[in-house]
Length: 290
Image 1 (spheres, one colour):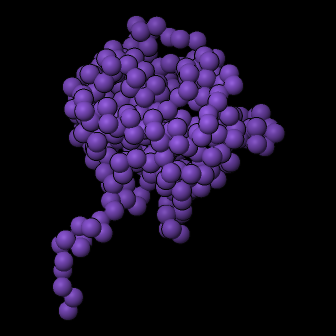
Image 2 (tube, rainbow, N blue to C red):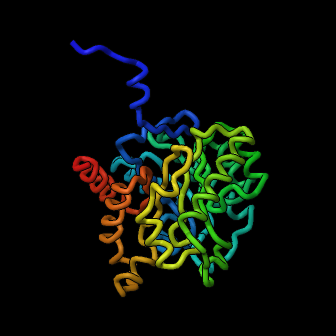
Image 3 (tube, rainbow, N blue to C red):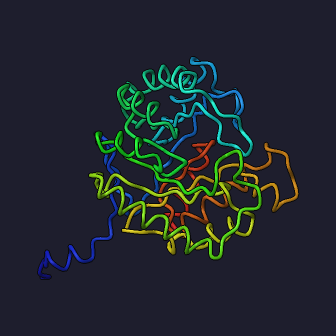
């Protein structure tokens, strides 16, 4: 009969947890799907699709049924060259939607914003996650998150949505991304935010050239820090059109699923997607093989 050795079992425990309010996900083996719900008229792929609250709620319910663990609500487009949205306009777009989604219970609501006031209002309305494309560079956003028990997505972006694709330059994109994540983790933990609440997003397509994006898709574990999970947001991104020489958005979904499988194999454990059902199927099949 084998003897149980707790110390050995603990040493071999490779589970990774992400905590966000009342939600805790074990990301050791099964990846998590974050569904995109842009309540904007101008997002690059689904602008206007979920602008009507009734349509948004119907889509959210479908996404949860299909296996989404997170519903990511955004009220400002971050596509290249997108116009800024005023604070009050963004709040008026997202807060009614957050309030409608929170009672769904089985999925956490995430607010996709770089504005501290929007994040604060969304958390007060019941959101459990703040997804900030600027990586919490605003001290006010750090204060909002430190005063909550929310989960946090820290994304890397060179520049801002209006400038990010104007000749992005790196000496070593993987090394520079890792250094950024290391600094963010240290800063946020020092501000009182538990490491278990933090995940990192490499920001595919945000201030990166095609070659930069490909390196980041291929070397996921090389920029993972503090045993924290990596969130991959590559759904329908322009790099797919560039690689295939096809600018038609509707033909990017199948390649998206291929990249979802690849990056799951490389170690990305959270996937932000437009098509939930297909992503869940691809992830479960990939994990069965792994």
